[in-house]
Length: 159
Image (tube, rainbow, N blue to C red; front, side, top):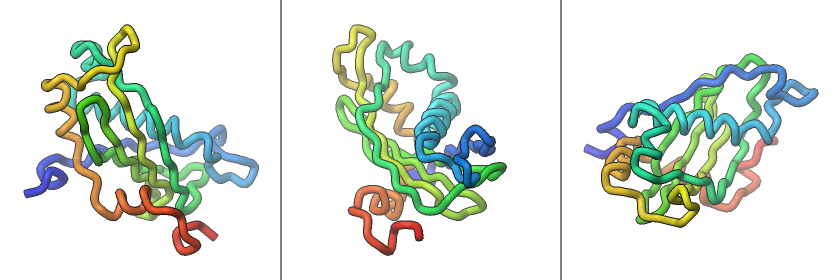
């Protein structure tokens, strides 16, 4: 049984507000990072009890990079489901993939790399107990990993 089958999906739902959209009523690209952050915090709350779990282990996870692929528009009043998926966990960092859907339709795919730091801003290893907790995040399926990692082609771009 794979890790993705062992752990239930971690999905955070966001209702798209007028403030999230541009003049065409489509979610502005700048809003997705905030949606991903909210989904990650809610995922940590689900698997660890709260965001403070990081502090209990003496670390903070700092986003070092993010790649976002826009697949189709989300619009005002849509319910955007953001799934949080673990792609990789290393010694000092982890990669989280995000899959945003509206009614099962892919809207946005993203991959973010987080690096563990101490409160003194020194890069550090992810402690064993925290690693075990993070391993409870379901694994990203191959299709999400490939869609976020591969170079865009005409067939993957909207329009």
